[in-house]
Image 1 (cartoon, rainbow, N blue to C red):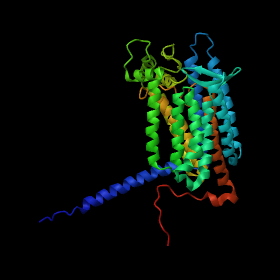
Image 2 (cartoon, rainbow, N blue to C red; image 1 turned 90 degrees about the vertical axis):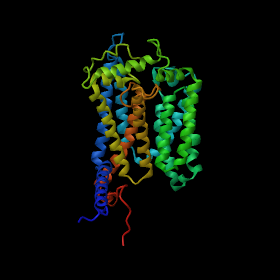
Image 3 (cartoon, helix red, strand yellow; image 1 turned 180 degrees about the horizontal axis):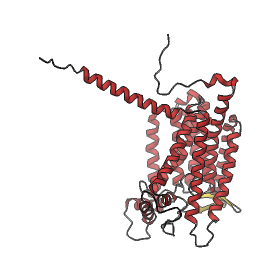
Length: 422
């Protein structure tokens, strides 16, 4: 006669399955936290060069059909800015790491002055419905791109210096949020650039999250930010027009605001899995406005297909893994904050751009980092990567210098439970 089971076999099976799941998660997390200074350095550098090279190629492809017959003009201009960015990236990777906080203060002052000139002087240049450019003679650029890098370095320096005081409201609010980040945000918003304003909000939020600010403040801030963005959309006709286009309520005529998004989706759909071939796009023939800027991802999808778009996403994923490993290998709060801020800036902006061109969110005019046409955006993004490479280079030196070997011990995983020793 069989006895009734007490359920111990089932409990043991569930416990074993939970342990296997925990081991898999730990192995995956160890992969993200692992690596060595050499691998991490080349992960970041390789992903950056691959993205920039793809960007130059796609800018050339998307602008080679210009009516003026100068197929290489725009791409050559972008290549010049890329060369400047590469020089700046390696220069940032070689300066003493202890200078980074001071560089952040200097960049914060410089970018604030430039933003003031954009908003309140004749040097400000308007294009695409926003005044976000400064033009001095033949040179034109976006000070808001420099402000992103400045906020990361300056904000990380301020928050790291606060230490444990960051848990108190007044210490993370001043001077980082107010007047620092808030002043930059107001100046950018005054120029009408809502997309960049959203990126700055994401960047500031990421730094505060990395610093350990209480989650209740994020909920309050998110509600305020959402209300402010909604108000800006309602009171500004062209922004509300984009929202209506996203909702599909003003798509009756071919040239209505839905046109750009619809043509972009046609390009992505016609690419299929393999794409129509590099340089063979049909939608770039004046069908998609600003095709080399905000909507360049659609040309990647059309010419290189789903594989091309997945390659872009994969390269950004490699960049995130490399930066995260560099942050995990450091014991300095400043390094962790900077790495977290740069990931939020570059990858957050890439996410918003791709969501925009695929119709998930309304068009907000945010370029795809490293790939979209724009000299100041490309240069500043590469400068940000140069800062991360600086940290990786120093970690490599620490790992190979004998008198620094005491600091090269293996770090405890952030998932490992704390155990007391006898």
